[in-house]
Length: 228
Image: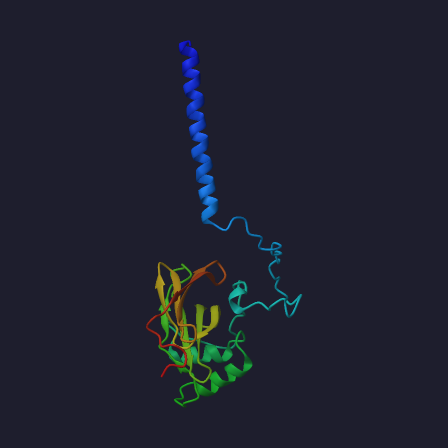
């Protein structure tokens, strides 16, 4: 027998051995298990449930935070003569004559000027800062109203004793504070209900102090609503 035939014979022999071993392994595996088991028909797939709205087509109303910032010119103060700088007594007269406010609040301000009754708003000392860049200080007036838990913030431009107009008029949470940075007005207010603090930035736009942006942050030092 030639060497080529001998090599071919050895290869065939090895193939037979490998096949025998593989067959033994398969039989051993089948013998150790239960074989093929029929579990019945496959479970049907159920599509995920779709939400069913209770009020289809309902559009929620806009919240105060979604309202566009006020950009219109405020009505001027008529029939009031003030000194420069504006005193607290002058500030009471301005608020009482400010038609940008409700008639109810203007009457209350007129009745409370100089009074110390519990139901009257508290007038803070009038602050004076140049917020319009004209070199003249505006009068910043704040009234705390404990009855309604609000603070009224007014900024008046004084062009003369009888030429006065608001450049900012807004209601804020009671206890709101303010500061100035580079001619901008930063208003800081806290809301115990949501335990947040909001810093609103106002800048002169040639007509009024316009809201440029507001940043809200959490206040961990405020008690949770309802906590004693």
